[in-house]
Length: 540
Image (tube, rainbow, N blue to C red; front, side, top):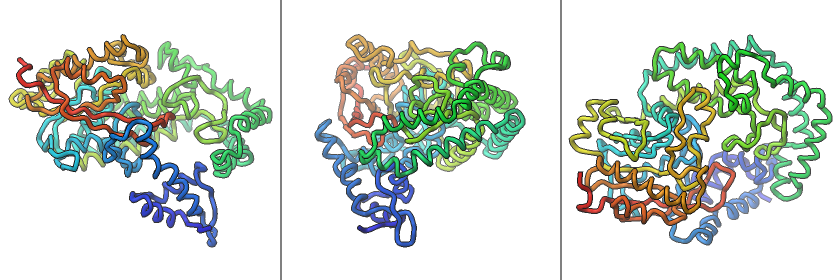
């Protein structure tokens, strides 16, 4: 047996896979029981080289062949970006706030930059051009356009999506921003320390820690589960019962401690049943205090940043299990066996830690993007329906000089990822933010939402909706402009969409989607449809 230290394993794996594998990547495999934790002769944590090779052979080397068998062999693996680490795909402002259904920035960059490859024979955009995203979502296209020196216009029916994208693409006086955010953080933490007694929660955490150390030792327990030596369902249910039996009085007190007893909550949050279901009273009081801190800030841009921080904190502090944070199922008050972390966990009872983490992260990430963004770049975010919006009129309202420039030369092209049929309810995924900030929802304007399903009627409505968007925005794009639409077209709808939109599909790039963040890791691909206007059919 050859035992490698984590550093040695990192070097070996980098060479074996032909891509960067960090020491933290190896540590992750150990911590999550993918490979067994061993010790080198120097008593340093290590792994067995043969076991590590077996893991990579089964989970990386053979993946391409498995995917080809499952979803076809016409995949462009250059567009899988398999060599990238998570920190690369969530660089700078791309991790300001979670968002289901966004594509990685490197995919946008591939089509927007001036580089050519074996597959991309032509550069479609150049610095100074303007790209449109009519399904803006979290703003990935706009952010990457800015990094590449392109102007951008984004449109979305969701007001929260617009707020998020504006925060990512706005420019700030960094010192002023940093000071305001750190002051609000300090004031909120001071309020929490002076208002709440954490002794009960500290005792609970200590008891959970001791219990986990005895019954769910890390990483040994995870490794036994991965090797099939333990049935996690039966084992965890048995141990969970033991934990509740040993701490029955504490659990009763915990239920009482999480109850709503303060009339301040109604004053701060009204009669929101959603908030009262998914948050305990203490967290709602802490959020209310931070919300008051936002109101005291003079700069609208900084207030917007603080709202995004608060929204991210609120998302992390909902009374649910760790595995259900992305898609809420049932409210969780008491400790529980966590299928994500393989141990007993308990819902968060204070925003303090997350608020500090996200405040500092936001300050750093906005500064990182500011250093990369082109100085003369314009980014305009429009809250409207892409099927009907007058783009030039809205741009002119936001930036008259840029609007005048666009009116004279039009947009240069489109890069977007429309909603997929029946996959995501885009307003509902941020329901907490709409409730916290009393934002108006227009769920009925979503195209292809989850709540409408994937049936024939839903597909027909989807075709009409996407085609209507393309027909409207095409008026504002130059005649030879390039349209790139990222879609999972498993229903084969895009040829009909292109026809209804008077477009030609000139190329299709099929890519595997790796490293999905959702629990469903099944083989999955998407197509980047490259479209252009049919000549002579667009009359304005």
